[in-house]
Length: 624
Image 1: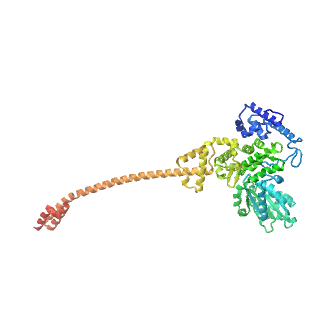
Image 2: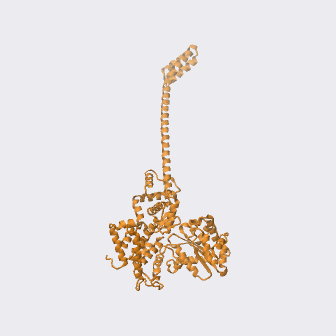
Image 3: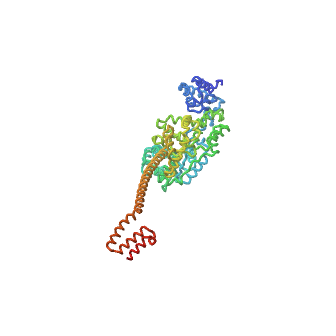
């Protein structure tokens, strides 16, 4: 490819020269070093457009180049391209408002849309209509949405401008609680109350009726229909950043009191991340109010996605190539946390536009959603400490191994490892959610986009190292979950060879067992040890029983033998005794006794005494 006169082409030629100087490594090797996909790095050196600064610097680091020098060269090339675009007839000669040489980006990137972006916010009109209608009927509305669902943009760029544009004396204020919710309220309500935040803070914190009184003062000059609408975005910060339980309880009590007072002039909209639904429900008063107030952010329909992509482009005077639109809809459909990543990819596509068209080629050159994911993941990993990095490795490996894709996700309890500090894991989950890499939805966690498994080289390397263990780990997790669901029934525990294999897996260097799996393995080991002990006791009892039976058998044999001998020798012993008695009776002349003894003697020696020859002799003798 000839370098030509284009700044992008010259810059690409210099990148290719840098790669040759580094020994001409393959793009697979560069991908492993730079943590960007092969397609992103090869596109950077293709010259179709100027690569982003982060991709350029990653490319340079992978080739061991001079990073500060290349950053300076990138800014020079970007300035030359911007100057060419701003020239008469250039692609950016006029913006949508006719400002020559200036054009506002039509997409917000990973950040939430703000109230000033209301004209660029598309795709959520139906949800905004529902929120406005609900707020007209009731004083409390709670919007729950998983991280990355765009709930903040709905409140800030959708609902808030709608409230401010509605007829009537209505004051609408948006805020986030932060570590001191009452202080944030005082700062944002001070202008409407025509006072300074200090005195207003004192009033707000003076009992549970403080907010109610402040709202009455603000609406006093507006007549009977005047109201204050508090839109509190990221309400979960009341639980995560407000460390004082007393202040948290007082803030929630003050909000509910201002809503329930008979002369209330206040309405409240809360935006809450879906995984904090349980924390809200456990608060007695707030939990009781949730069923009638909750609204959930549903995934965008294909038509809403199409509007979110083409609406901002159309307002900026741009067209969207059909192939790009089809690709975007395919990537983002059904992905709960894909909206910020999609917005980031489209922003990079806009920066690489040709004329007034957003093309698939520019989308791919920017890395697409995969490129945005890989960059965000690597930035997150680089910002973590040593222990947090180990927790991140554990979390992402388990999500990939256990099927933690967007949709079903994985139970949060399965991501906590006893060897890690619980705070490290919680920090990783929170920061990964803010980086739009994970979706936290109630008690489940999912990858924001399953493409992260393929496009983040670091995660792919981790998975390659543990490839052989993925299926056994999935079986162990399922067994532990089933054991938990069965009330920790011993019949669901591992034994024998499966238990030994699970222990070997737990001792390996891959993703470590979760708290639940560790408890499952410990219970399995204890149950197996108890069974072994019971078996040993049973064998000892059986051995003692066999010895006792043998002894009893010997004693029985001796007893039977003795009895038989006694029966056989009994008549022989009795005869001499009877003979002596017979003689004594005869000598004494006792004929009757002699006859009886003789008759008994005949009975002993013959079964039929009458037939015995001695019987007749005995009878003749007795007649004498």
